[in-house]
Length: 201
Image (cartoon, rainbow, N blue to C red; front, side, top):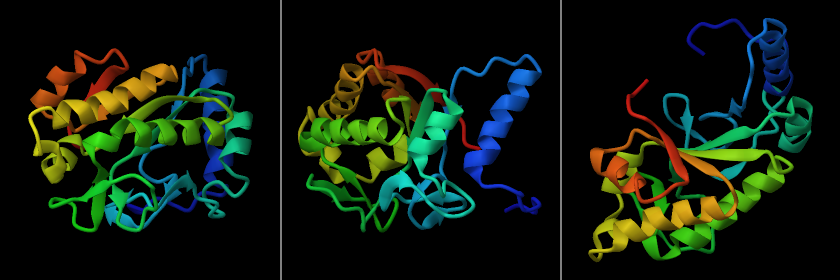
């Protein structure tokens, strides 16, 4: 993409080489983030995929050996990412169709805790326990597009609390991405939320 030459190796090898090169230069590497390309789903906005399956793509260019093998070889904590969930995403939990990102959906406040608890447990299984931080992107637009967030006065708080409490119980931290000012205020109530990215790319 963007005119870059094709890489001679898949991501699972290239990212390990990047880590090794940084360490050889004396640059400490605390963790590695897998952003908007590592999981299964169609491209929705630019290079951002809507989640159909929150599992590593086994594409020959990405993780043909699977995420567990990559995590073992990399041997670093991993930050894993979601933007929005495709309508094709299968889940037992209740979700609301987005009015902002057509063809996507977001878990309802009532099911937030159980949904995110299962998501984090999946992340830990996929990485052999190396899942350390969760990034949720397009937070403002996801919130604005979900009617369930305003069904009652405590709905939004319930949604944020479910995500944060499930994370804290698993010793996972959270990064908010593209949040609103009110998102930043609510983060003060949740110790699991430790960082935020405030600007677009």
